[in-house]
Image 1 (cartoon, rainbow, N blue to C red):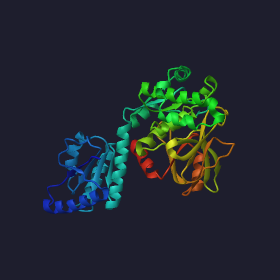
Image 2 (cartoon, rainbow, N blue to C red):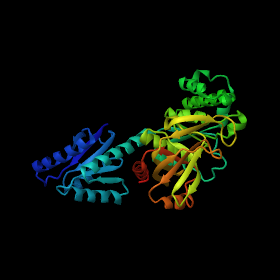
Image 3 (cartoon, helix red, strand yellow):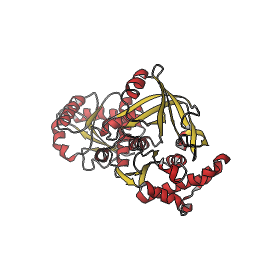
Image 4 (cartoon, helix red, strand yellow):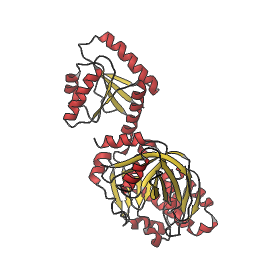
Length: 410
């Protein structure tokens, strides 16, 4: 972890006293972080090359110094301030100047606990943005016909995330599945899954694993970071579904969604880049506005999200191999971005149950919202949702996702 610390100091202040206060302040932050800054001082020649760059405004009277340096700086300007030597006042003047010129910046100020937490969160955001730059995500076939509100803006996605969307004909996948050249891609994980598939689903085993292998080939051919597939086209063409394949790919660290839903895939890609975890793409299936509870369900779930799983057929078609997975109970986050990334929904709640009702898709979770529960269920989901699918993951990531989306939209 390479976080650079640069300094701005006015000659009007006593250097010795400033150093004493500054050293104590920075040492306390480093102790909270558990590592030391890469101290660059007034040498800004490497600015922009590290994992994160922070400018420590040590004193007041530094505004004009910063203004002269600004043309050589790039990206979001992070201004670390203490409560000493008019550091905060100078930082506020600098930030106001940045905003007047439509430039992005932030003051990092508060207790050393808060400062350390904020620096780590900003590091995660910056690291995720760097990770996504230049990545390809694949859309295999068009989005499903029923996703009428899930349009995207490719330019906005490229500008904000650095991601390119690669359109791949679904026929390429179908032809690959129907070929006999996939055995070299059959890996150890596929072998384990093959042995676990129950007798009543044996007729779908080869086809389901062929879809997995064919998707692996497409991922390699197009250098994909993630993918989404118009999966219902497989029902008639190969008499199978991609549910099992997507569960396996997500476990391998490749964000993989279904129904050609690009906004949902973008959400999963952001989750993976920020947290390293998979997300569960699910349908909102039932809402109780008074109690602030919802049931979400879908026929595939990443294997790395569940503590146990079993197999069934795909819910709507009763063919193929779907996954019923059970997640750990406790804190959960529900997240979804729009296709232009201008809007998003994020909230936290408690995952209270893993139901298994016959009338719903195979993986099911019940989530109870704790804060603004009626407003979340009624005012968002029942009045102004961002489409159908939402992405669920265990744990509380509200602040991280909220900060990331604010960052890419400033």
